[in-house]
Length: 263
View 1 (spheres, rainbow, N blue to C red):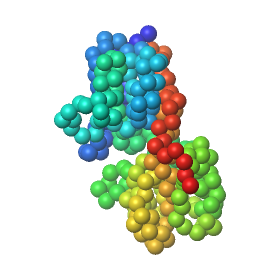
View 2: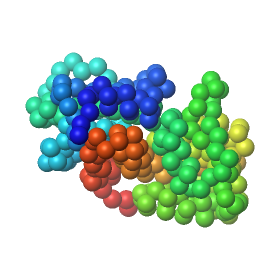
View 3: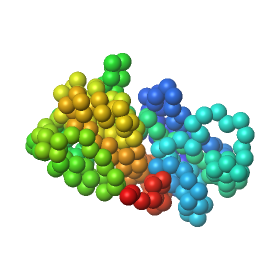
View 4: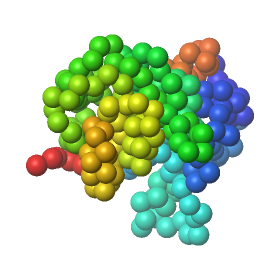
């Protein structure tokens, strides 16, 4: 059983419509080597040297990644550069690449919904900014709990990503939570305006955390990797469900967390 690249593109667009991606993003096809049929797909958070090796060892036809391999225009492909090396290895081996980035974050059932469900949030709604665009999600905890307890719940939900940072009194009671996976610290104010007592994201800047704290909002930084590594299981499961058994979908086992330890 197999599918064409165009069929897979249509299926992925059903899961996470490309027209929903942020203007600065580069979701969609990144490499198309022109295979007439695709049977094996590897799903990963992002492409690294080890992920390329994993794809080659598993003889996959397509990699579906969350973080785009190509963000900006390429002026030169050079093997001495990591991205150039990955491009050359993948093209010479005949492996195509598709990115589902902010389109998957925003999508129904995507990263933000997944995290909200892992936390058991109820009455889930879109977290929206001044433009009215959906940025993340808000929802109510199954019961009010102290900030410290919420952090432990999050740590468990994310399979202990390590390095969670918290701004706020550990005993502050939390009922409503806002969240946006990845690097989205700037949306803390939108969460506060929508009645949240705590906001969860990753890669929060110093001044964002300081302003949130001064505003009375508890802020939890679970890391970029920590909040988005859930992509692999989620996307793989959705692909399996929608492809009707026509694809073999493999979840990457490579740890792409760039940080090796925390002191």
